[in-house]
Every structure is written in structure tokens, then in C-alpha cells.
Image (cartoon, rainbow, N blue to C red; front, side, top):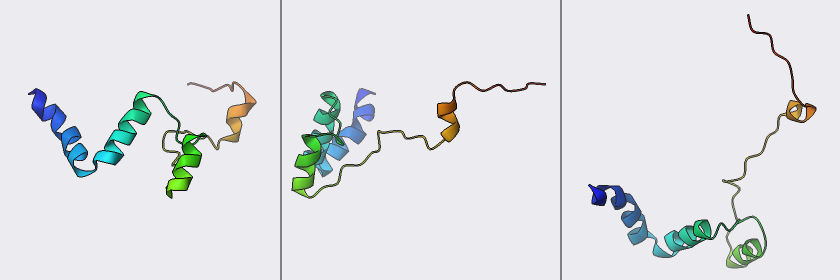
Length: 72
């Protein structure tokens, strides 16, 4: 039972151990890949940090405050 849950993690660890460990430790230490010094180190290594964890809102009405709605 428990082994079935760990199988995907172990497969990824076996395929790409450096990337897996880097992602694991960056999540463990809550490092933001888009901030320095991690960002500058990644750019020196030739990698581009992604903003996968960053949520952006392009909705201009969000900054206008509360809005009323009509419910029938």
C-alpha cells in the first residue's frame, strides 16, 4: 500500500536525481526561484526560472474594491 504511493516519487528520483533533489530542497526551504540569489545562480547555470507558482491577475476590476451583484 505505502509503496504504491511512493512509486512515482522514486521513479522521478531515479530518472533525474539532481533535478528532483533540487526541487525537493527548494520546496523544503521555501526558496522562490524568481528571487535573488537563486535567480542569479540559475541564470549563471543557463536555466530560466519559471513563474509557475506565481499567480498573476490581469483583471483590472480586482483593484476597484467590492462590487455588487444581483441575485434573483
